[in-house]
Image (cartoon, rainbow, N blue to C red; front, side):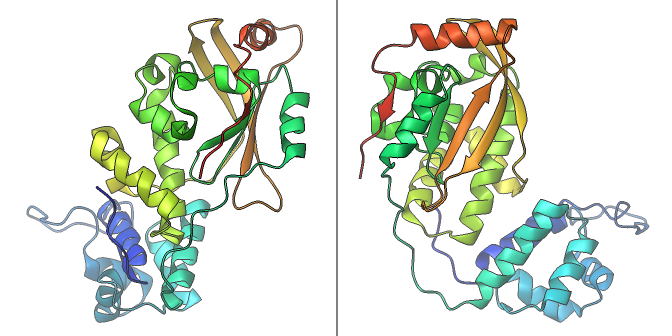
Length: 294
């Protein structure tokens, strides 16, 4: 199963429809009339009125027929839908993409990790660190970077993907006390990326697999939530070192097709740092290196 191929305005229409049906009339400053509303959230005509555009124009947008909304229209819709900064930027990106002629799917990005990046991962020890592709394939890692995600090393190297791990690995729920929050942010990142490049093969393969195999993923995918990246503190209930809370920072790798470095740290002298050091020392010798793949 794979997501359908998209015309230029489909993702813009899908995002608008998802956000409209999740915006309540009261939150938008409207007073619902008597009786039962058959439409969840705002009606099309209500959103069009709030944004100051014609109902016909908005209807064409939501049907994927209007693909060149002006920046003013995009911003007015964002205000009416009460989008946050990340959602607003995503709407702008979708509008830009919708206005471009469809040129077919882009090829999957290279999985090659440059040698100096491998040295960087080694220098970050004992902090767990790894390199992921834009679709969260684990491309390279130091010992703790792989061992932190308990059980991930048991999968074939080319199947190691943090999104796949969260939804399909039996250890993920026990490892992550805030698993529900983690999967929401995972789907949000994939949704944002797929919205801009919906036919890219690396994304369609992963999304198609998770839609087929994970009802949790399918339900979240339908909600079309988009959130921005931010530094975070993550807690793990690790089977080898116990409960450990680490600060996390993700950084884009310059000159790569969307690759990112993920690094976990803890203050020296704390129990979390001791656990992190133990994880690094006890990780299997093969738990460091580069994933080879197509």
